[in-house]
Image 1: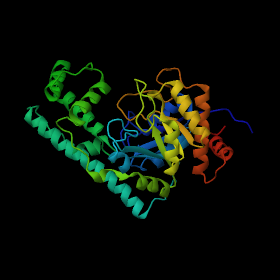
Image 2: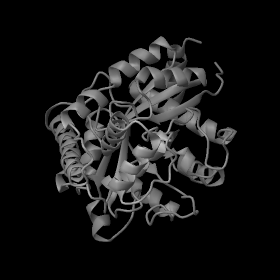
Image 3: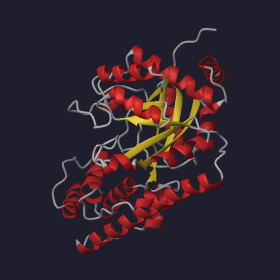
Image 4: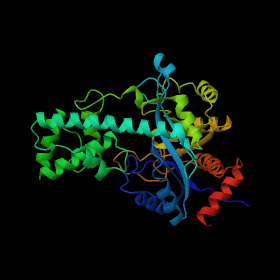
Length: 369
């Protein structure tokens, strides 16, 4: 049976980590409205949203992909000063898992390690909240932030520095009743005026995060070594959870530059294979169409599963339907086909088979057409 190509967004963060979306329902309503029929949840360190994601996808005749994301440490690359897919931190390596088992099969030591790395990530943000409160007291701003309240009101159990920036913005809006006063408070905290307009919520939160909570900021707290599991351990946890270890490419940045690791695509692909990683993904708004087609086609020809996503892990709300940096109209037909084939391979894996055709059958059965 011949099927048409479906649009896919295989990497979307939800409120179970940090997201532009207020809810899973909002994310999937947007996906359905934009006719994106295959959608992947991809939260940091969390499987907690899987049940809701699956149920809400079924209600909208969407096909769910069950994914996860880690920040790992490639110790050899760190020692050699090699930038992998974090352009500012040599050795720090983002890894995703695609097509994890649902219901979860993660138990024992692997479940404990996942729980602990998530807890350490939360503790680091808690320490930053303490420093942020110290800054609020020193600058005589007139209020303090409650870490417990932020966790209960703004998160689903995982707290990230973006939650702190959001909580700070909300508190300023609550305590000061004019744009001029609010912008003055932000300037007092950041030591310089913000560039964002008073009504640019996403811009304000991004600037607060960048000025206060990132390296060099007064509330920044560096991560403990325990916050980063070695890359081979993360790969093992993903596999134990039934998933496919997946390398997220940065590829070309706004200046057309690549990280040390990704600049030589052949060497990069060969190294990933040696590590036992045979799946790759791209966040398409980072890249030009030409580079994305070059990298994705090459990797698929090398036997990699290739998928694309949008992340949505910042305050900025963007479309669900994917597009590239230089084409706001969407992906080329070549890229749509690669993304669809990759999603069918992940779907096959989720159902315990290797056949891309069988994966496609499962998808079309779910969407009811």
